Image 1 (cartoon, rainbow, N blue to C red):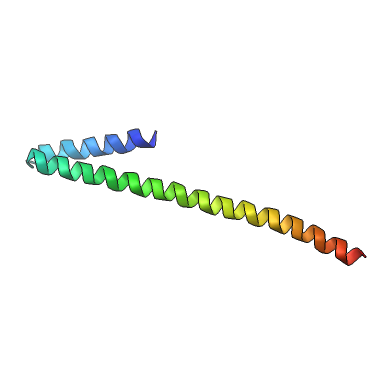
Image 2 (image 1 turned 90 degrees about the horizontal axis):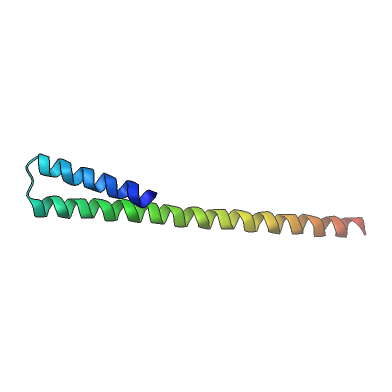
Length: 76
């Protein structure tokens, strides 16, 4: 879905560049640069969100086991 959205944005950019009078090679180059930029930003964002999610889930499991062991030590 995101790839389709990025592709549509790039094609609209290409169309607008062609309508404004840019040469075909310049319009193609700028559209490809826009596609690659958007793709890399979204890919890096998804990667970093997964890293943050994994870190939060690791902290949750560590704090859950840590509090249980501290309660066991306090009871004895």
